[in-house]
Image (cartoon, rainbow, N blue to C red):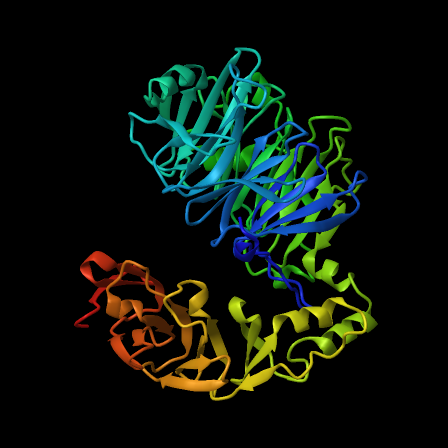
Amino acid sequence: MPDKERILPMVLWGLHAPNHCVSSLLLTEDQHTIVTGCQDGQLCLWNLDEDLKVITPRALLFGHLAGVTCLGRANPLRDHPYVVSCDENGQMCLWDISDGRCVEFRQHPYVHTEMHYYKCPYGSADEGWLLCSGCYSDVLILDALTLKVLGSLASKDAPNWMATISVLRCTRTLEDIVVGVSVAGLLKVWNLSTVLNNIQDSEPVFEKESMAVDGLDAQAVAFCTYTQSTLLLVCSHIWKVLSLENFCARCCMPRTADGPWTGGDFLAANKVLVWTSRGQGYIYKLPDRCFSALIRLSPFTRSTYIHADNNLIPPVKHILIDRVDRALVRHTPVLRYAEGRTEPFHKLLLRGDSEGRVDTWLIPDVLVPKHDGSVQKLPVTSSGSLRQAFEGTASDAVAAETARSAPGAEHAEERTALVYAVPHGLLACGYSDGCILVYPAAAMALTHFLKGARDIGPGHYALQGHGGAVSCLLYPHEAARRYDSRWLLSGAADFSVRLWDVLSQELLCAFHPHAGSVTQLLLPPDNCHETVLRCVCSVASDHSVALLSLTERRPLLLASRHAFPVQAVRWRAADDLLLVCCSDGSLYVWQMDSG
């Protein structure tokens, strides 16, 4: 690639940590790296020291444009620490977490919510599959390194979305099976020994068994590797231990006052760990009869059995969220259980929350109850957050100096929008009082990173005109060369969209089509009509969408009959149509030339 076309990305952070509302979480095989995905699409790598006492954020990985739905291991070998991530748009990325590189990228029409790595018994050391479930029927099989779809595990009986799946590797029978529970509550079993031949013949693999297990709203299913004869099925209202022989329930426990169950796993042959939507964890010791006699429960006697069984040991409660911090958590925490495959074989419970914090609990093999019979509480082993990391990177004096030399430091208002005009090397910052400050990006970078360079200089200027907070900025030339490189667009809370010349500092035009704050500025795709290609699309809080001609300096279309907030805008250029999707699920289709 010629030097003049080379793009060098740069990320500049302010004094405050970025938002990181954890939506998925994973611990590597060596238990040294924690990977979290957030609702904004970023991944964060955290170092976990050998003593399990310190968690430190190491890197932020950018690649997704939507919330991360799930994470999965792609190769268990230590010399290739690969992790796969998937987002709400179906985009998948393969990451080398040793250096943060995106090794592979693929766009799928499928949105995965769960991924399990499966080592192919007949392939090379690096060959493996990803068994995935999500917002589609049954189970997909992907190549773990190329992310290509290889085949599927299909259903003859009532195909449906899988709420949760698990891969069972039974050493007694030498069979590998996949157990899944559909959103309708049906438990399905697939035999993986027949998958290889079917994949080569491009044929789906159908289930071996299918039965109803009262698994509505299933959250997780786990295989007991200690006995290889039981399954843990966690639903939001109840969890059960099932016999792997005939999938009958051996014991069960309904939800507690701390909220619905959201996951669980086996700690030992006679112990299970389950957790709730509020971040509370419980350890249950299973009754002895779980392993001696099979207990059959009917819907009419199940509640009686739950309350009458005296062999169920009271749970040991974990403090996952301190009472002081509980009010800060805005979304359901994400919890995962991980067990070490090498010495010292740590058993860890991990939790990530909406504040960008990760906590771990080391679960001992022996839990000693209190003398008074009260619930034992397990303290947090280690904790780390992005906020703590940002606050600890510089002293107060350095932070104060950075704040004084930062763009807009003399401007007391909050920065609300930012855009970079690459051809001119200008950085435009919008503020809550309607002012737009434009800086030479190189001078700003020197001010931040070089000692002694404390003055940005006379090159910065202000664009005044908005009467409310600047909500969005757009430099259209960066996305499409058909737009003038001097143009800068801004939308604000004063209901207006303004077109600026960033070199002459002149206001070229002001549009006032909306009756609410402008929330988005979008560009039409390249295959639209010539008239539309000279426009910009604006979205406002009054549920309206407008097409604004930048050459004719007038609105071409105002779509304002939407009853609910606009969630997405799409284009059907061949038919000259504008499609508007609203938050209630409704879709409006507008003719762009006639309105």
